[in-house]
Image (cartoon, each protein chain N blue to C red):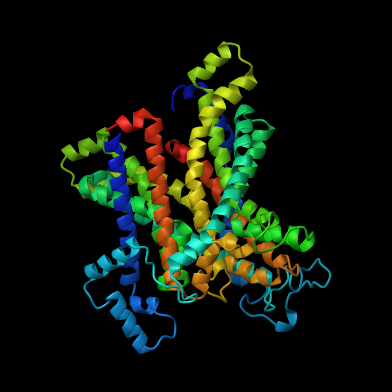
Length: 306
Length: 292
């Protein structure tokens, strides 16, 4: 067990290192990094000062070492636009992103799991076909377009919901739906296939042979076991939601990390853009690690394998 | 998890549903391709030139619309229909080229990684895992922030972001292929590693690469639209559908719906068709990929 966790931890550390190296190299090989790291329109003296500060005249591995050191100490540089440390800005926006992601996740699970179960239980029936259409649309419609159409219908035409901003539950509804549909589709598909797999297993046959009512078989025996892969996916998706929300947050002016990234692009605020991509990648690596460890705790087959 | 799965008669049902060739999606994709090719002949107006006197005209069938601008005009008085027609070209060119770039890089690295194994495999797979962890859209935005937006850069960036999807799957296939008789015989016959990879492995993974490519087409088109929507994709005044949606935001709150609905519907049609075709190809060409 300890060995397994240590090995996983090692892999994750390598991934984090490679992640920082990737970002670092992309900034350096594509031209003069000082043009990205100084504010647009900076004077020659300012550029020189930045060169000194980031040690851009040093050999590349020295530069990487100092880049890595500052990352480890949480120093992602200062935002050109807000004039504050990027990490502070990021942490300030994170709760909003989490709130939106949690709402979108709640929506996607509330829709995805029941409809997935219905589709599996009534295979080929009306709900199965309706679910297929719902999933196909969810996977094909760009979330930002869904958001724009929602604004057209519910804000402009009907005047029921606020088109942008945050603060109340009403502000949350449309962005959560626009962001959550895609994931509802993914969760539905996985619930369906996972239920189908479980329903075909021996212990379900046994439960049926014992004469248990079908509702009990599905609710108690099948559902619980089918849920494990869905919840795993949901865990990863929660982090992915935070990081793909940029377009939805832009459409609804939702003050989360995606919006911060958008501001970073518009104001040519490179440290912000760099920090968002780095922290996003790091988040996903860490969540993957946690899920692997959790699985090892639950399932002895995983932790004992070589 | 695989215990007893054989009890469910899943396979015949799936092939029944998807067995029929998806005529409509193929027709839609082909028409979009034709529209893209013959945009100059089809478009009634210049897509990049507007008349400020003709701003925000609604579609022809609404009050105030004119037959001259069937789908209305935008905030600069440019014809929406003509922009949609030329936008098809941008989506087609960027979508297909990016999928091919990503597919070529990913397939190559997947084959090399799977066949050579050892440290080469380790390096490529670590890199693949790491890049897969980077959120695709955020990573693409970061790259455009470095190199600046242009159609060419977007293609390269999307290729860089999405090759990992191919590399993973192709490597897995190569791992099982290289244990097969015909590959072992080729080794015994004295073929070099490169010959085996090129002549014996590559033709056997092409199907998977095509299936993946079709499924990736939708993803790539949506990503391109999102980048253009955020202002880091295809630079204006070029008519890209994502860019049209961004422009459409200017008239959204006053109810100029045609600027939002039409470009989005085009993206939806194209992505939906690509996904349906991809699903069908997946079942037909490569049942092994059905869990994707």
